[in-house]
Length: 210
Ligand code: PRP
Ligand code: URA
Image (cartoon, rainbow, N blue to C red; front, side, top):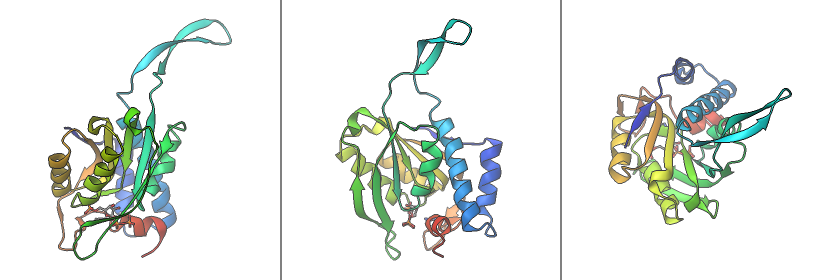
């Protein structure tokens, strides 16, 4: 399935600010929200529309409105939380689920510790959020959770700020139906599983825990 690299100038400009090690937590948090909003705008381009009658102050007309589509926003804790508000701003009616996963620092394998999801996942389109797609282990584990709770793989879109070839390949191999939206596919992973050039540890920079 497709990998969408979001080349919009606003996204690319803000991503450069996010990469900058001189950007402090407050600005970093705000920028993550802003980029998430812009990414959600791109990722929802295919939402179906239907005609809807509306009365302007002057006359009746036919507008277009999103067909009663159910959406869920699911951040991967903790760093994915940083993207939620930016998307809720655009889609306030969406339900929000949470999946808690962290990477074991030695093995780089995902460790799951929390999962709370809307009960009717099978009926929802899902925006799965995590700023970083590195080895792909966390994203693959999160999608596994979603599917076990009834989600359809083709209804899941994965939104990340920065990815790398290894993570993209791992995700595509495990779940080819899941579309990936990313602001950048970076060059490589270092020996500790960090994306190069990347932006560092997204969770630590969002929450100021460096
Ligand atoms: C980071 C990031 C992803 C994961 C990506 O989370 O937010 O969830 O690593 O790496 P992967 O693709 O190799 O799995 P981290 O484990 O640092 O947890 P945190 O969000 O709690 O900081
Ligand atoms: N997680 C991060 O936060 N950053 C990386 O570069 C890789 C995984």
